[in-house]
Length: 110
Length: 111
Image 1 (cartoon, rainbow over the protein chains, first blue to last red):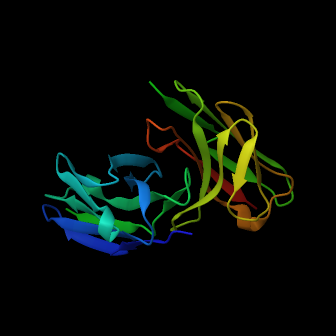
Image 2: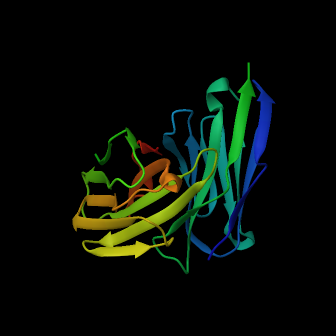
Image 3: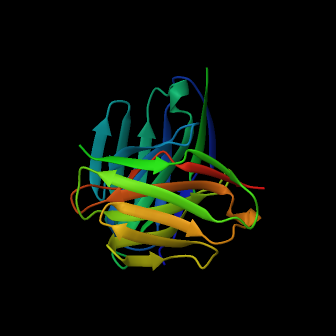
């Protein structure tokens, strides 16, 4: 099945810093989503982005489907950005199956 | 608007006891439904998914089973819990028009 790897596994930032999180996948995808898991375990949808670029406030994401990767950019980070960031993909050979990446644990220090 | 309900929020069960977790979706019809499990400090593992009533796909052979008795109801069960079944269980839904959305999860501790 499709493999989904995220990097870096852990990231510590000072408040106000910028960061880039990466998601690599091993097969062509129909869908790709980015999630933020807060300290209470809730999974919050950030972006639905099978291709192209989207922005939402301080967050933006880019997926280059032909090269099988997606990037999540966080600018001017805040302590509330702390948590774990996951990408999830639905491969073209595994319709309806959303496979999650390994996650990036982000800690933003005040 | 669409909402997903998952209960209970926390559960402590002894080894060997049965399990039943329920998930229901409102505001949409014929959703794809999913059960994921997350071990402490780990990623999300897809356990089961369903594209219609009575249609269940199992991703990982284990001590668990799933059923979909109604269009918007998804149930995760076990006849006898193992210690290794402890974890955070998350239900999710999607449709062709809507991407994956999650419930708030159930924290299961098997003692």
